[in-house]
Image (cartoon, rainbow over all chains, first blue to last red):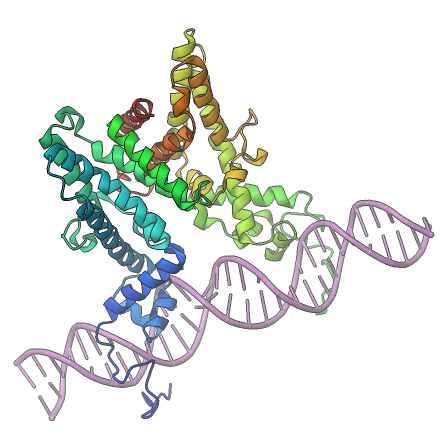
Length: 218
Length: 218
DNA sequence: CGCTAATGTAGACGTCGTACACATTGTCTT
DNA sequence: AAGACAATGTGTACGACGTCTACATTAGCG
């Protein structure tokens, strides 16, 4: 009640102004750190505001509720996945044979996806366990540096396979969901499933075999 | 402080004895109901004890913590999945050609798994999103009526494929993980992923195609 | 310079998990 | 049969969480 505002000497948090400046971004960044350490369940409004040096309710000026913050963190995490895929594709970009190049580019989508899952399990689960729908899977807020979301990178690679003749056009429709299923399922088995304790080299072997299976079975 | 024990007339919860009788089972059953309605996150100790007509702390006589209760609910849910797979296999049990029978039996593992996921999304996610390791994937507490866990039903079907000559023996090792990856990944896409809003008939088409891909690509 | 909307704070409520102390009761030993 | 002991359930309490309502501060615009 009798709050005399801000005590002149004691500044709030690590801040000297009443306004934060870019709280929305700070909250998402804090949320990403929380997600990295503890997965989607660890993304808490209070923890994020604490990290941003702000009172808990300040978050409600920028996010409708916790779900909205998690959504934003999810988008940011998908951006990281997209960057991981792009990095993996960059490693194989110098193939001269266009058919082989398209195949390698397609495989890089899967291996990049899975390598990211192993390297950043908390972020990965936040990116794809938190519910997403199709329209948001192509939203710009989830894109990497190239401006494409993980889902779009996959469809691009499949389109290229068709263009180059490596995939019959009649098998193209829906193929993204088949490929995504296999790769995403392996990620889940490796992260939270029965293959959690697998060593890196055995995981790598499974990754290769799953991508083989997809290439073979599409 | 001055609790005179149980007031003579007012009985606790819906109970007339101080002891519950089979609280452990009652808590798991309550947990299953919670999981069915709201997935693994909805499995709360307090909610389960409330349903069982018991004080919150009574749960700690039977489960070390919330994780332990969720684990138990997870095992129970996996038992339901096993039953769903067995039911799907029973539908195709009357094939006379042993090779065709083995193939149908194998496919029934995947379709049963996915049909259960669509029919009971909350239970399905509780069964497989809550972390599991390999040794517990073969534990009896997760088995269906046949005494086999979903994982064992899958390996059984693969072994039969090899025995019948439908799968080269050198491709057998690890094949369970490839098949599981594809099927589990599709389940995730359909439940919490971008395919959440898909209609039943389109989902059914994807299920068939994913199982095709596995059969083709193993 | 003052109004208004945007932004942050304070306090409160109900939920959750869980630790600690205590009450009740079945069982086993003497 | 009586009393000790372990198993089981209750009560109270604490801190964390999400979120509601009211209030304080400030930027920007007329």
